[in-house]
Amino acid sequence: MTTQTVLAAAGGVSGGEEVTFWILAPLALIGAIGMIAARNAVHSALWLVLTMLCLGVFYVLQAGPFIGMVQIIVYTGAIMMLFLFVLMLVGRDASDSLIETLRGQRVAAVLLGLGFAGLVGTGLYRALDGVPAVGLEQANAEGNVQGIARLLFTKYVFAFELTSALLITAAVGAMVLAHIERRKQDKLDQPRTMRARFAPGNYPGPKPGPGVFATSSSVATPARLPDGKLSERSIPEILPARELTAEETSLKGTDR
Image 1 (tube, one colour):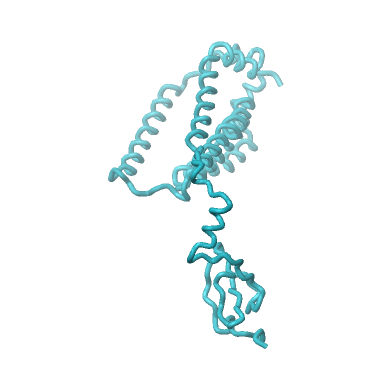
Image 2 (image 1 turned 120 degrees about the horizontal axis):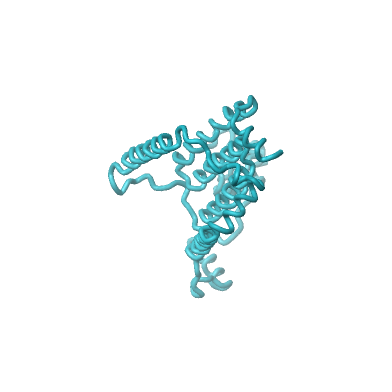
C-alpha cells in the first residue's frame, strides 16, 4: 500500500472504524476516570494502561500504524511497566492518604484542571480549525517510518537521548531510595533467634493442627484439646475469626 493510498484512506471513516471507536472510546474514558479516582497508585497506573491501549488502537485506525505500535509497545509496554516497577520497588500503602494538608486544595485542583483543559482545547481548536496539512507528502515520500526515523536520529537526537537518560536516572534513583541497608547488629543469628523464641510469654511449641479432635472439616474451626477446650492456636492468623454455634462446638462423639 502506497503512502498516497494510506493518506487518502485516513480521510474517511468506515463502518468498522466507527464500531471500533464506539466500543473503545467508553473504555478509554473509563480508564481515564479510573486513573483519577483510584486511591491506590498501582491501580491508577493500570487504569492509565487501559487508556493508552485504546489510544494505540485509535492511531492504527487513523492510518498511523507506526505511532500506534509505538503507543502500545513503548508507552504502554515499557514506560508504564517501568512506572509500575518503580512504584512497587519504592512501596505504596493500600491507599493514599485522604487527609488534606491544605483545606479545599482538591476542589481548587479540579477547577483549575478543568479550566486549563478547556483553555488548551479552545486554543487548539481555534488554531487548527480549517488549517490544511502541509508537507505530509514530502515527509512520507520514502515511507512514514523512514521519515520519523530520519527526524528522530538527526534533528531530535539530543532530545531523544536526553529523555532516555532521564528515564534511566529515575529508575536508578527509585532503586537507591527503595534499598534498605540492614545493620549487622540488627541481623539475628541462630542463638539470638532461639532465645527470642523461648522468651517468657512466647509459645515455642508447634501449633496444634486442625483435624485432631476437630468438630468440623473447616480449617477455620479451632481444634479441640484433650481437656475439651477449643484451641485458638490451631487457626491460621490469616483466616478471619468466626463465631461457632452450639452444634459446631459439640463433641459429636469424639470424646468416646
